[in-house]
Length: 470
Image (tube, rainbow, N blue to C red; front, side, top):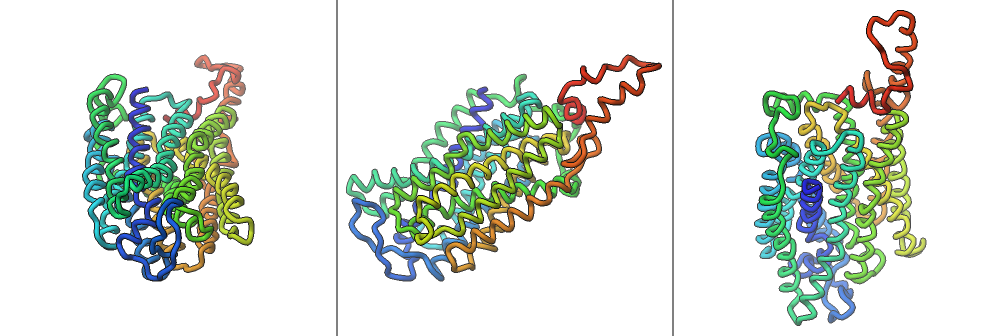
């Protein structure tokens, strides 16, 4: 359980530093002089009226580039983190990531221009790779029968940090403002809040947790004699099921990262909501992580106990399908079609399906190529972040309309949802085929003269097929 909480808190706190800029962008873009118009809005109820911008043209391009940078470095670090974990173990890997993140977040408090904002968000995105540690660490600690529930809960409560950030950072900024500090000084001091969290957490991880129940992680625990190399990464990525899972995960976790970046600005710009209220609304999106990702894992485990991998794939497909539907609906709502209250209701349902999809994804990952669990966890995790890069660049950076990007993004999610029926294993089956039925009927066919005692069908454990694969 110390490993569970170490992995979970590491990912939760990582989000706070990773997306610290996102809810403060309406303030930061003013301080850095990025605005390309003279629109005046009230950022906080108690603030004097300050020059701000409803971002357009050059301002929007800079912010979009910063949002892309905020997930770009994470793609590379996640991809190679499988090898790093195999070499150093999950505890040391988490400590290294959080320590590097503390340094970068500290430096980011001193930026003075749009290009420096882009650079800061690029390097701080490495904090997102704590997710790979989160899923790998729990996968080697807990029983395979509940791995969907465990990974879903650990990942979901980790992702909850994205929602907490939307509330915490504006609240801390408002606190500094209440002391009479300037707009610039207030948001810069706010950046040191996640740094303080990292210092405390790294010390606890280093002295109070361990890699496995027996102590230090060894590569032999995965049934391997050597650490992963480039050829192993290539072999894993060449598996078409891994390839599909990479992009299926890009359509759910990638969507969550995009929304963490754009939600506060979306509510401020489109619905004229003040900064603190926008943060609270955005928190409702991240807050669904409290139960929804776990719900996806629990539903996957439940379906697996009855239908094996066939059940896991059906739950995965339905979660992605529901996500696409509600994302499209969200892209149809503005002030004339219900305003922010209607948008919030749709956002909550969208968030539930997003997080369920993430939970169902990593309920399947441990069964894909079990001996290469670290690599599969890493490349699928990298795919999630890659989805945010693809979506931000393709749908949000160049499209001037405020709502069209969400509709286009929904089409992207739907496309990858429709690839789930293509996934198939000889021993585990597919959405349309369950080999478990044939295996439990086989003993009956051999009943006349069995050379070796064979258990009856009723005695077959529900997870027999998945356990055999593992």
